[in-house]
Image (cartoon, rainbow over the protein chains, first blue to last red):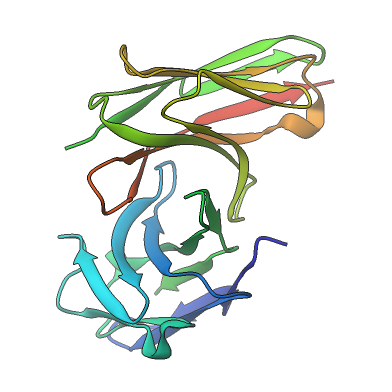
Length: 112
Length: 113
């Protein structure tokens, strides 16, 4: 039990469609992070929240991507007008008080 | 910008061998370093966390060391088992305040019986 639940686990979508992923920390954590991981690569930082405030975005996060964390609990990541290059594993992480990061099982997106 | 490098990229060993996985980073101003394990198609499982003031951490057959000044960490796996087969990732968190872990590409380990 990583303390982070991500849904869906897998998503297959046609190019041009919009998709939304959800991240639910089991308990309250101030910081929530989104990463993207492609095959054979390490996770790459996309964005993070402190409570409900989105504090930093990577240049990887194009204007087709938007993330929210209403009420500072769960978070959503939406991709509009998906492209084949968006196919990846999207990972959510939380940091506990000792700044040890815990990750969810990820959402694997396949754009066909 | 922090860069993290992991060597080797892949490793295949017979069961029972002791292993050393390497991680190097370019900016020594770190808050901590964390080792993760990732099974195919799965998320990341935290193995060990080393704070910047620490030199090593141990958990079972795993031992991680940190030499902040030289920008290096090693993960030592004793008496490897087939169940250890996975990708091992190193992540460095900078001390600048945003606490964003930066990852290497990982070492893909296969332990064969």
